[in-house]
Length: 174
Image (cartoon, rainbow, N blue to C red; front, side):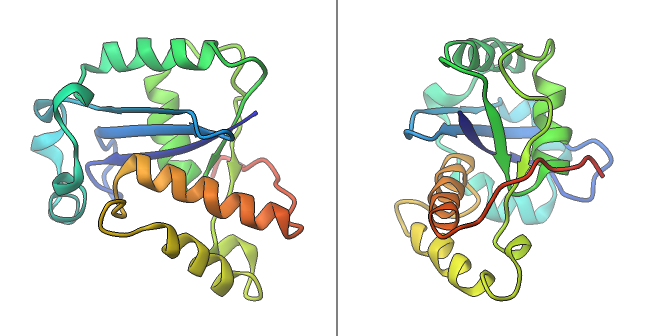
């Protein structure tokens, strides 16, 4: 089973960025989404994230502590009927930087290595078409830079790519 992962965090060039929100969507569209409390991340939040990510947060019932997020996400993963593999467009930041830090202990039914999938990794022949598919997913009701919308867009684009012959491979930790 594939799980499409996206996270939002305080800044790409930070040594240890803080998690703001996390989303996973399985192949059938079942989803997990959580946001961490503002006091968890606000001090370290860079300007780009403040203007492009924070304004899209849903807040309210989606905000939970890191401990509760860990517990709920672990339970969600443990309910999966088979071994799962993460698909992400940014393994270093989303998988190794955020998910691996959040999920301790690591769920037994979750592969320790993700599949890296980006429109750019598809090569020059695929990239324009896949970028169009990815961009077509977003709109006013589904803005970019919201973890859940980004995870769904990744799932949507991945399905298009694999239906057209792309074969996934596990990412390497760089």
